Image 1: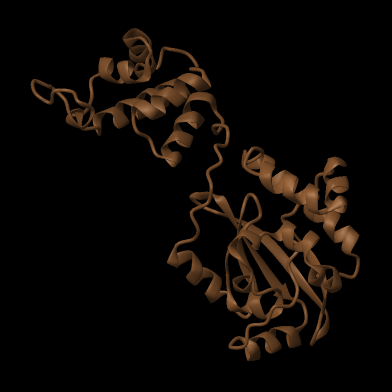
Image 2 (image 1 turned 180 degrees about the horizontal axis):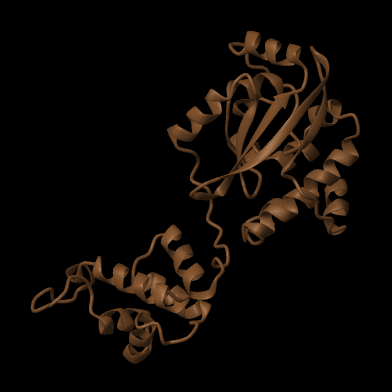
Length: 280
């Protein structure tokens, strides 16, 4: 089956699952369930002939704009919209960034199950929206910060504790800025990060200089070194993971390299302390 035929079959299937009455169309005298072709075409603002050809697999490759209008007309979810683009154009749609609504209890339980390894959930704008107790003990207790300050860049550039915890603060700060730039662009969040960038430029000449250098960095995994106020030098292997179904979130897990680090965290999980921050 060709891509065009698979696209046509998918459109027919989605059309057949819609309730005409929910869209103000009469549900009487219909030979098959769902909307009629002309009704979908009307909702998508395309010609009935063109839509019919698409369902028949002979309309050629539709534009991204047409697929977007069809996704809206058929009330597709984000996952269904992505599948429509993969069938129609062989690629996912452009990212549409949406402000994070926080995490579900299920995702919080995932973080908690990772203890004694510190773990956080962050948005594409690097706001930390969830963390486990191990993170509070070993890194920074984000719960002790005002919600508007639970941002990794703000902590790195505006809190002296972050500088004290790093062996080479400037190198870490440059890495953070470059990785943040990539994450924001990948998520389509360029407009969403403008207020944060403007505030940091006002408050930190160092951030302003680094931001205008336009460096970019990868950030999937690596090793983080910090100076812990009680344990001294600590190293973590960290890995960043995408959260399926939540393009606004990523999870970062820190695995203490030394066994004594994990043991110390396990013994202190009931005693959160604000110490140092993650570099992302």
